[in-house]
Image 1 (cartoon, rainbow, N blue to C red):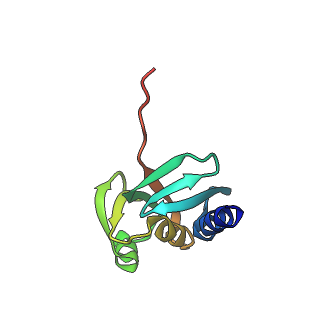
Image 2 (cartoon, rainbow, N blue to C red):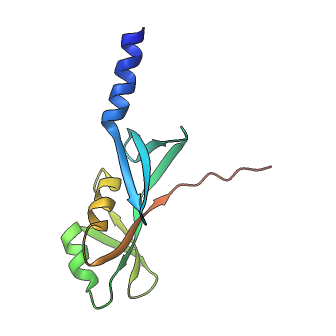
Length: 116
């Protein structure tokens, strides 16, 4: 039984990802495509679309072509809601965040509404 628990914990660690946004690191263990468990053991679901803000004077077409993105909604000349067919959205967002032409890329989370 101890061996079995070790395997489960070890596999979760292998699938874990650290997502960094605005100098904060979040621990997420992947359960399924775009479904994760956070450090508080709560399920976190990501949509296939996400927010992206580009630096001034950078053409959005360059970013769209580089990362195979499609615009869903433009909020301004710099802020967009985009979509990707990539299976691992979190890795793609992290990769985009590392691009010098990007101010930030941020996941679009599913939110549960709780009634009191």
